[in-house]
Figure (cartoon, rainbow, N blue to C red):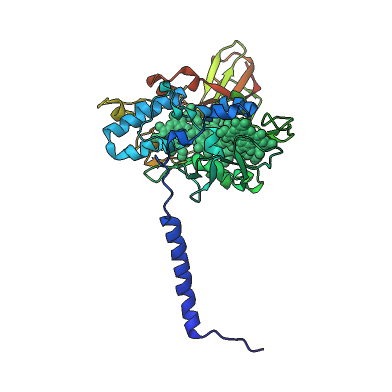
Length: 460
Ligand code: HEC
Ligand code: HEC
Ligand code: HEC
Ligand code: HEC
Ligand code: HEC
């Protein structure tokens, strides 16, 4: 059979057309303006979560114990927003829009319904205190960008609420339209991914999930943070469901959720040694529980660190230093005596601010973190002032990290059994920063993620 040949004209057209298609797609995705929801509506266009509570008491009580119900009112949020971010934009007016944007995720009703920024302080008890409320989520129709980030939700106030379930009874208070968007992780990614003015992904929980094993298995945010359970009455007038999506949203502020997230085991290379000899301990840290990296989210604030201590037969305690691996930027992953966070000086009105301790934990410990750097290359916790990120030494979903600690048995170590204990500790906010900014102690308390011990014999 004779093959039909394309005319030279057609052959010439193919690349031109495909370039045009690519260009158009590019222009559309780049130029379609994200609908700017800032000040587009009024507070009165939205309903308060208290109103939803009258018929949805069970879900309301769950949500009210979750951090999203306090995203605007929580002490550390108030301190960072008002004392650092707003103060920074007062000193540097060109970042005002970025700082107003904090509200796009932390108090969307104030962002969409307020006319002045900053919104009233939490003590004024305005609608801003609604934080990430029922309305915010259940008025959401879609994401306006792909991937979703920076409050890219499409929200229209009104009596139509969106969700997944087809209700058994009509609600007297609102219409219900089912919307498959609630099934997706993009729904959460509207706020759980954030790109700052330097183009840095300062939050990427949904993107991390998408790169990891749980995406392939279709185990989504909702499956771990809104487990299905019952019998549960999701609304007063209806029947209990066996598979109601519980609004727990428990995360890093729930010690129980954090506990056991990483499993760890410690083993020696030899079981007996004399003083002066070295034992190499291997610690394996396995991320068994999170669908994203650990830590995720507010990575600039968070540290997890491995502390290993040996106790000899007489009870004397020795601290073991982690062995260096030699990768670039490793100095940020081993605790030590460094000053950092100097960029807080500008918003705080301290011109020659020398900085404060970077880690605030015993030296020589491995830290699982990703450092954020300001435009001058100094470590920062001000994510909006982050020009660059350093080495990503967090523990990915189902990843196991292996650390070694070479311990030369001290000459004064007592003969007999020596117990060696490895602990993974976690802190939401590095302690020197918390203390310096007078953030209440619960934000910097040490949470034990996991621990394991082994023994060796010290020979006389
Ligand atoms: C007067 C009572 C009442 C009030 C007030 C009320 N709801 Fe409902 N809502 C219901 C009932 C009844 C259902 C149907 C429950 C079912 O059978 O699943 C429902 C269902 C829903 C659903 C759909 C889930 C489903 O099961 O289909 C959403 C979402 C929802 N309500 C959100 C809200 C929000 C947000 C508010 C506050 C702005 C609110 N509701 C206030 C009674 C109420
Ligand atoms: C952070 C977003 C978010 C917030 C805040 C939120 N919801 Fe939901 N809600 C969801 C998602 C997502 C689903 C659907 C999950 C699914 O079925 O997979 C849902 C499901 C529901 C359902 C159906 C539950 C069922 O039986 O399966 C009701 C009713 C509801 N929400 C009401 C509320 C009320 C009332 C509030 C405030 C107290 C609230 N929601 C706050 C995201 C949210
Ligand atoms: C409108 C923005 C928005 C959406 C949508 C949203 N979140 Fe959040 N979420 C936040 C903010 C802001 C915080 C930080 C709360 C605070 O200030 O501590 C947060 C915190 C959390 C936390 C941390 C709790 C803790 O203990 O530290 C979890 C877990 C969480 N969200 C899960 C989800 C899930 C799952 C979804 C999707 C079903 C979702 N969020 C959708 C804005 C949002
Ligand atoms: C396989 C279960 C699982 C999945 C899937 C999952 N998470 Fe988590 N998530 C956890 C666990 C466990 C923690 C507690 C440990 C921690 O803080 O990381 C957590 C913590 C969090 C935190 C608090 C982190 C911090 O340091 O403040 C946020 C926010 C969060 N998850 C959001 C999400 C979002 C958004 C998704 C979907 C893109 C998601 N999670 C998917 C298990 C999961
Ligand atoms: C794109 C959405 C988004 C924007 C914009 C945003 N945040 Fe957040 N913020 C979040 C989410 C989501 C979390 C929770 C992450 C986690 O649990 O680790 C969070 C966490 C925080 C926390 C830590 C809460 C805690 O208790 O640990 C503070 C403080 C905070 N944000 C302040 C700000 C400030 C100030 C700005 C503006 C400069 C801002 N945020 C902009 C989404 C956003």
